[in-house]
Length: 289
Image (cartoon, rainbow, N blue to C red; front, side):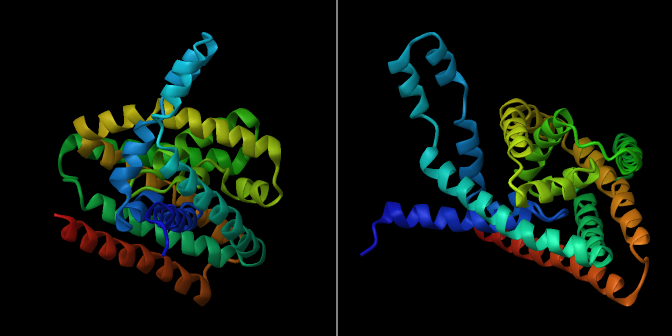
């Protein structure tokens, strides 16, 4: 008979595998997968348990207190989850890298469909006729459009930019509705990081990991505050950000052969996938009430 604690570890690991696949695809949120599989609240609770108190105590030589503070972090949940996410990201990134190399137009068309469907669904949660929301939408669109053009022109992959990209992407990865990979695509780092992960580029991956930890500890509470106090404005901004970012996959599609039936069909497939996940998400949400 299997021990309940061991079974829980295995189930959390499997959920991590599913989240890793989602996080590797621009337009699909790992946070959404966490909600669908019933661990979203537990994930937020575990993230909130990660504090720097243990490190502060350790640096002051209070080793016993530091160890006690360290035990407050939910390692029994976070370690199997992160192991699943990491393993899945590594394995699935190989598939994505191969597709980007051999079939770039249809792959970016799939991303295009994912992003536009995600933006559409996100826009349904807000009243776009309110002027503040319109301003947020326009600002997000212009910002993403300009960033998408700049990253396409410069394509800088410096370690400071990788650090910043990780800090921003990790915030998106834990939110249902917006994808961390989408942020990386917008910043021009997506394909580079996929290749770095496949090649196990230590310097890049370590920088990304540190940036993700800093972003998780620094920005998530701020983001949570903004969502609670300015939710409609924030969602409007994110919607505009996603629509403006469509410039990135569109340029890649045009640059790799342009419109064709396979490109069109894969775009539709990406669009439909998001709606299928949303239906599952809504069903899970209604069952949990």
